[in-house]
Length: 379
Ligand SMILES: [Mn+2]
Image (tube, rainbow, N blue to C red; front, side, top):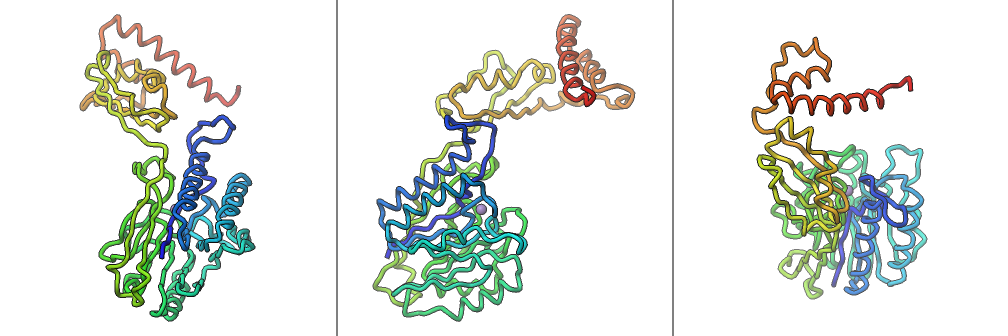
């Protein structure tokens, strides 16, 4: 039996001020593209079941575009005739009863099974049971629901558990309302053929459990996530093993999709004029450049736009500045007496010759004037 497990697709997420040809935020479009790639692969693989472990949408009230996209894709999935089971994650669970859970919109598709009610739900087929535990805001309720789940395990069938949580404290995303699976209930995992997890955005097996996996997200919801490898999991369960203890027959494979890469570059400014930078691997990439060993004078001269020009084919370029050690140590005793502009000019004066100082003085004053203008509320 073959199962495709994917998760954390965060449809509707957007980031960076870049629009594509259709005037859609480029990063938002990237998330739709990642989702489509998984669906295309599913069509080829033709599994017995498809499961999604939460955070289908980025928000509990997604945009019209995100909803429209999802409905189009779900129509395709539904037409495959393969059961698709999905649970709500923390991003798709409303925090109050004032708004209705978004996953409800998929209830009328005949091959789609949704679990979003903050309670245990069993989705049962001839030989397989999917034990779903969607995100729950209340930990006490969660515990009683885990116990309900445990009571429903049927050793004569395949048992697949689906959750959106952190197992232990290792997989927390630093988000509001995260749910940590209680450690003393982890023994339940051993009674399952496979435990599908969502929430953590990297693919991986959980601790010592051989059958517990995060599929990871299909795109990165933060530029702090440097993983360039995203995708989904293909699980092959041996049909012959009827007892849940035969994990040896379970085969897990991570399948990568093609996402926009994030490329980090370092530019040592000790010899900035002659520094060479290789931009050949940055086509359509999100590029992060770190300027190192900068002096304060160089920091004025080197504009971010100069750096961006070095990567003409990149999707976006961000610049981080790291000063030469000791270069930004200044005497702060008189700082209150001076304006920031004066303080800055004083600093340059100490660090440069007269000619250089005169040249930079004009430049600094111009920059401060622009800043003042932009900040003046009376305009
Ligand atoms: Mn997520």
